[in-house]
Length: 487
Image (cartoon, rainbow, N blue to C red; front, top):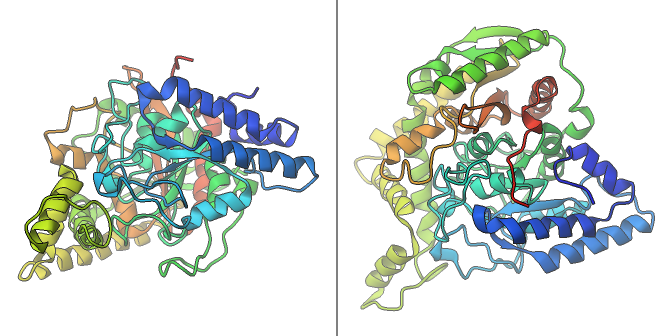
């Protein structure tokens, strides 16, 4: 039987050489059953459906059908991605009984390619958080040390890959929610360009920022999953209709003449010394590979946190207005009139962090404040994008830490929302500018926690981004390290 310690390509080759999808899927389900109680990566496994799909793939392969490289590989889905007939809760009381009548576009793509949907993973409620502690069903824990958080909001998906419950997973990234948990859990996480992957069937948090993307143990896995989910979808008005290169085919081709940008703003106050040391070592790795290191400035990045929380919370206020106890979601049992029903239903259905962000966004959009806050934030967002546009005229990728610190302890930042928000200081700008970004393992702290390296590229340059990340991965062994697991 194979082990999920293998590289993605080795896993693909084993399936193509005779190992059954059923045996691989069953091994993942066994691992979830035996070990997920300590991690809580999953909201719910989908055992029967996964095994039936795996048997179907095995039958097609045995019949001589040519299948996609991803056929037979189990994949975990963040529980804000709609799955037909399977509850999609966003880890919220508000949607605890919601069973979608349709699949998200990415799920349809995965099923068509023969991937096996193995379960739905935990998240910060409605994807609002950086630790997967803001979940109505309880926190997910970091497989490297269960006293620590896995990051968020896609912490369940990152933990599922790190704990070897699934070789691949999907998350969503609004301000770093794929890259930051990938960094904390020592796996690879890719946020594609805004518009590259359809958001149809993704429960919206902030519609101009959200993007679905892959988690994997290595860069090849991220490339494989990206190839399947990327592409135009006419049901998503923000989906961009342009060709998608086959990154799986090119990811191992090193880039010659690579120009790596390093922004001075990414090495300021608040950066953990061990994270800074790992990042500077990564710069030297690229230099040794023949890359040119270019010093840059992104002067408007200092406004990114403020701009992000104004825009994201404003959009959340609008998007979550539909959860009123009438159209969607939880309805209170006791109320005296319609207004009271709205109040009681939303008070009971939403957790504290969701309420905080909805209130902030409603205030920013209110009469007399719209121009001063939301409109101004949109203007500064444009300036942040302009900084990146100018930078990418000089460089191919921009290198930085993914997070200013390794994984913090569960509960360590619960009473300080602002400190928690600052955990996304290096990732948020990519969402504001619509850029692709990736986090790859790049070191370990003295306490045995992973450290991630972030690379950003110009819009729709995922192929270059993945190849650049793979160069670093091949030159180091960080992606081949795994937490000690109690089998």
